[in-house]
Length: 355
Image 1: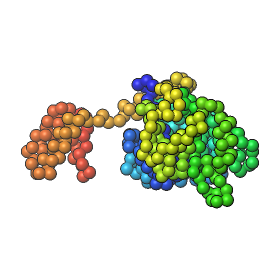
Image 2: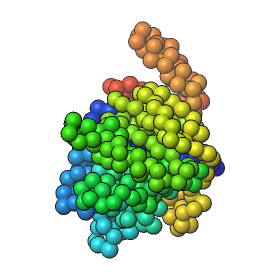
Image 3: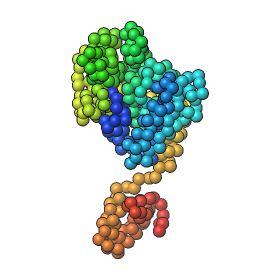
Image 4: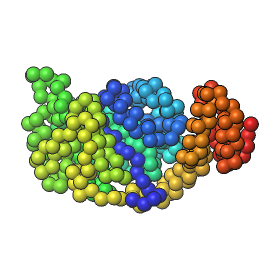
């Protein structure tokens, strides 16, 4: 990974994107991102459903409240189906991806999402933003689609197709990882009568499916209301949620509970990579241009010594030592910074003296 390409964090949820466990994941990612927090929500996984806008809209409404402390600006992208006015290839529809600090995709059909996003402008722009630091959050169907192979849940569970795997989007392939994501790992909707674990496949079908994968594939099972946050820049994973994340390599299952961190070498031969090198040049150039403009517009953070002087001035003001407070203000200004007192506390800004 180069200095110009430091990927953001990637969160995979087994379910519960609008539940408390999902909120913990969103909050953990938002803490490291700029404000106001720009969030883009892709409709694509549910784009075949007549209510896809409502499905995405519920997540948007949730994030506006749950991430309220980060001044979220949430945009839903109706990138539903190729060859229509609402296409994942549409420039205007997918442009918010270039400005997003956090990108979410969730429930729907894994195979539909893979067909619509493979080779699309939306997928290229999403990966470019991810490579330049945006956080990605995938849940349920989108979690499956992110892997090298995608589980055709509807086709097998609902339509009775023979068990098989479909091609996934292989987001982590450039990093040396051959991953299959299976959400709803501990699902028990079927109760005592029907085994719906392993994403509704049941243990028997899951075992047969696992035997069909190539030997280098690693299965990551995510329990309901449980997330795995992957930080590729630091080469580590972190589990958050009510259940466990189960890593299966060479038939051996290794569970990780809430709060546990592990190195990405547990998932396979991880290696750093720059996704930008495999994307279309035009997409990379526009993504870098947008990122540079956003960086230039962001206020310069005050150095530690300035913040210490501001804190000392606030202490003097609380003691009503106005002479000391004025002297500290003058010292701050002499160093090229200004203090603006507001009801919620001081704002520290670069520049000349402003009173």
